[in-house]
Length: 434
Image 1 (cartoon, rainbow, N blue to C red):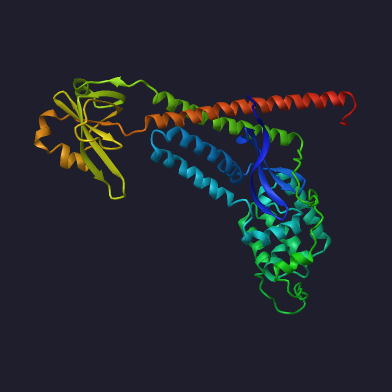
Image 2 (image 1 turned 45 degrees about the vertical axis):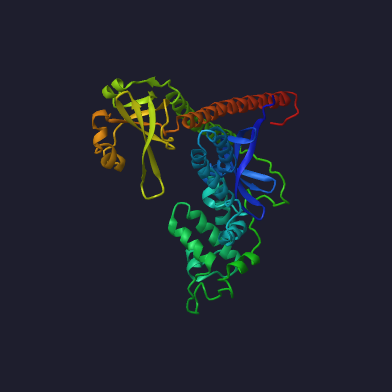
């Protein structure tokens, strides 16, 4: 049996003109399991960014969610197709929604164009690594100071620019400042939207305002991308090469992997707990036992006869089916998925024993008021409609996924160690420069 594992990029979002965001996962049979880090891809180059929640969710929703939905349909479907669809449908809807995140919305294209002109990349400043953001800011400040401006970037946002480059540099500085101060981000949006207020003509810094400066498209067309460290060329789209950023990159990747492993472990342990809880062998109980105990998680009763009784609707299309289980001279109400045919003989039922609900209509208007049931009535109800088998399967799926996460993590760490040894061996032979 072949085991396919490794690392691949998933969760592609905000795709526009050759740039996009992805998250690299450790995968098993191409199903993403453990997130290793998010990257902003620019043609053949990519730079690691803080872990991006939207890309992370997209990676899981597009691939892992349909895989889990398929397992639920296969595992639960034979017991209850309704329950299987109820569990699988939200995962499939989430998966379909996640595919709509792939392309950058058209409403954000102008901002992306301005980012490209100001930063040399379409990446939003708040998603840039702190080091790259500091380098870009230093270069923009140098370009701004070289112009010997008589106004500030905020003045440009309020009253307009003298030329396209001034608008782009001011926009970039304001967007970078906006990572920590929302007001500066709003000022950058005024440049983007062309919402400047004209000033009186005179001997002020705005007397040479550029005609048409309020048109953001014209500004971007007029301004070539500025020379900013870390801004790679944009060749035709090809499979990206992930560019590590030294020890910090490795440290962040390991941190993200361990975080993903911790989440998978918690889910796996929860799934194992569910599986064990609902795999407990049911306790065989008689009418005398039920009179002494009002609650039990897993119960099996042997009915002498099994008869339909009531159907209660809650007005939302949801129905509660109630049948009566005859236990000698006693009667036990049973919640079922479908009412049995009248005259059904001896039947074995399994479910959870619960106190009689005092607010449901079948109790207040039926079971407790019918005089012929008074001497035989038991004050408990057996919930045989709960899908114990389905819950066991769901628990088993999460338990297996938790174990798979550890396997993928182990393979990945093993490969990292082997790669380090190979690099060290090559360096020792002089084939790799320090």
